[in-house]
Length: 506
Ligand code: SIN
Image: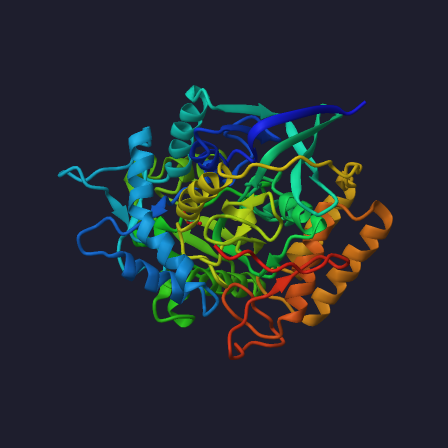
């Protein structure tokens, strides 16, 4: 029998930085946070190495950060949202520092900041080199645990959004240890992360399979830009799933990309060489690998003996595979890293469905456009997570009844493995009509066999939108349409069978 719980407050699905920030911002309302995994595992936030980009330095300004964000986004960012992100960014970093995130400091007490690709300034606030995500999430988790207003429930997976007859979102049908629980609340905030687990090669926790996006799409929410998937150029290629990351900050420190012949190849692809935009570097590495020349990150001169202190996570990952990066080059390959697409939100996190908010990677606020600027994702999670929590706490649901519905179909493990291979092959760094058509057919065949669940809906939206975008822009590269087409236009879709709803104005 299905258990029924009413939570008098805000229900948050996901416990990464966006979810916990939203839960805190929901005060003085109570927040119930659901996480499919134990807290601080299974979320990309805790794995972030680079840090948080914010104009904290005296030589920097939010407008400069905004200009770099807009340039990386290749014509598809929403400038108003970017303005919010970059203006509120410095305070978001200071707030996390106040909560106990131990950001690296300069001698005069300021924030030490790293340079990353496509930033015009060294503006990434970091923690112990590559420990930003881990330490920020440690501070956030402690803060959530001690808050009398926040309850967390781990091991709980959302299986359907609960709606009333008018389509208003009223809660979540969740599953815990095989039992279904209907949890209703005044407002629901999705903070379910990205889609790395849909790809065979990913830098994110494999649990992140785009389920939040798929659940929202199946409920009728407007989805934006699903085709824009960012591939990190330098996942450490040691045959591990997920693939450990070699942070961009290494290239910011001067690490070089070499092929197996020892040639530094990046200058042949872009004038900014190793500091070219992330999509350019990912395609260059992809091309070297496809040509059989191999790709390696050489940080021997740039970091060398300082590796264990300055980049402990990368050092440990390399050493676990028998590679000592102080003296050896690191084999690298592009891997799915971030989804720019997501559930459309306005500036307060509201989606097109009344009662439903979204924040973090599963949301599409418009700040990332076709290509996210490095280290803007923790920032977005903090800035827009807080906005979503603050808006959701104002919502009180009128009396109403949930329309009954079953848990949406899951995808069996063998089919998921097949899907991941197909996504990497056909919707990866370089795409074309043949591969994307094959992928769309694979997804449709799987839907016929396994039912139309959220994982397949998300994969299908990525394939369909990538096929429909007959141009190359940002992270979306079509070998058969290598040029960008003007004017730039975002993708807005609803799942077939659902009515498109106008996104509520702020
Ligand atoms: C990195 O450290 O290279 C990743 C940073 C990011 O994805 O924003």
